[in-house]
Image (cartoon, rainbow, N blue to C red; front, side, top):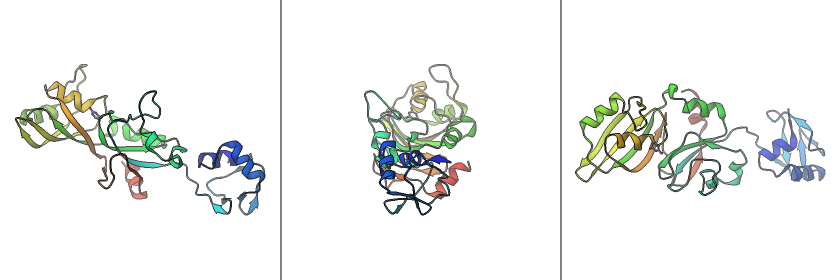
Length: 238
Ligand code: URA
């Protein structure tokens, strides 16, 4: 059971004070009965709540796929930079979602946002081996030796030996190369540091896959959509 003002507040129906006024005005009906006291406790999973005659769609969690643009940080708050949360409509912000893992400020592509802590935990734990695939542009040619280094596990600048990763070459010339990198961890700047260890630099980085999901190419950078029921299930079943 939860207080009506809390339920409606979380769903974007206004602050506690505003919900209190709505109730006083007789705008809130629960199971057919006008509720004037906004501190009344109800079961949000089963109660039929109406505000101004419209049924309130209750849900606890929100799951969003964002095509992250460059220039925004993967955080819920930042003193200087725009965050991925700033890109969302208020109707989603009220759920207080957070990014699942982080992409660097200049990295683009697949980023999940949710307020489901259990799913977040599951998806970011390295022991769960969730594949993340990145498309990367590298400043130098990439070769078979590099593929082998990824396969064995690259030792990055702080001495950490990365779990084996997969490197696939899309194209490689003297001017640079395009590759796909699959890793299961998410250390700070990991892909960039893996290439630095091979004396190469990542000049463009885009995450294109995350576990069973791919970046939805119909989403422009900065756009997002809700996950489907099937997608949420697929992530939960990992
Ligand atoms: N690896 C990086 O270096 N940066 C990212 O944003 C993601 C993975």
